[in-house]
Amino acid sequence: MLILAIESSCDETAAAVVRDGREVLSNVVASQVATHAEYGGVVPEIASRKHLEAVSLVVREALSGASMTLDAIEGVAVTRGPGLPGALLVGVSAAKAIAYARKLPLVGIHHIEAHLFAPFLERPVEFPFLALVVSGGHTHLYRVDGFGMYATLGQTLDDAAGEAFDKVGKLAGLPYPGGIAIDRLAAEGDPRSIHLPRPLLHDGSCNFSFSGLKTAVLNYVRKNPGSTEGEHLKNLCASFQAAVCEVLVAKTEAAILAIGAKRLVVAGGVACNSALRAGMAKMAERRGVDLRIPSPILCSDNAAMLAVPADHYLQMGMDAGLALDSLQTWRLDDVAAERR
Ligand code: KG4
Ligand code: ZN
Image (cartoon, rainbow, N blue to C red; front, side, top):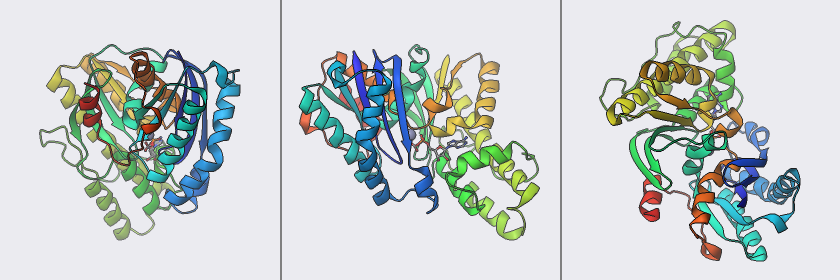
């Protein structure tokens, strides 16, 4: 089945053409990062307008990149939520218009469900597997037993990992999004130079908390003039990144032991982080677990990843039709309950 997928949940307008939920024929991402960087974070109203300007162009580019027209498309997938309401509305409206005009089946996909299946575009992963999704809005550990079969094992009690990266980046005077800038600077810093807390490291749960760590960085910066400059800034980035990664790896390891996982998927924008990729690889090797982290382009927001679950649901005969609405908040557990 040839699927056209559209994603517009945050600050990337994306469209892709994927065959059989596996073969990516095109994967176009129009990023608004430069626009939002001026404001130090995503401005929802600007995001909606930018999506509106970009969506038709991005869809057209995805089709031409796959050397086809809409005539060849057999199904449409779109991010239904969670995300910014105005931003989601643009993608959902575009997908509904295309599906209606072309009499194609349409399926609304949960953004995190899409991230979970991104590695399948490179090589399928056998069920069941443990998944850590780390993005700007999520830090969740799931047990994945199949399409639509998800159980939450743990989650952040406050900030998501990506949110913490971006907030620390902002207070250190780095460009938005902070995660990318911190990763780059940390490579030249000493991760042991500044002692920062490892929140909930030994609480016995699979939950996370990052807001205290962010506050610890803020307090350190206030007490240490010059800590956001030169070598000192590199050390600060490396120390903060090490604290986040140590907690993410340790909690994932605890979840592996708790459910006896043999396979681990790490996905979402923060999965681009070089220290996290290295830390997870080391831990997975020690535990004899098959680790799958998608290539960076498939970790951050894109539309191709939607096509993996969408192919499954469309093959089952699912069609949301014109009744499809967007959902600003939507728990993955509720998707699992709905699909059952
Ligand atoms: O999945 P994503 O592209 O969008 C959301 O669904 O949120 O994730 C974006 C997040 C941002 O917080 C960004 O700072 C973070 O991923 N990120 C990184 C890196 N690249 C992106 N964080 C740490 N290191 C990176 N290399
Ligand atoms: Zn995302």
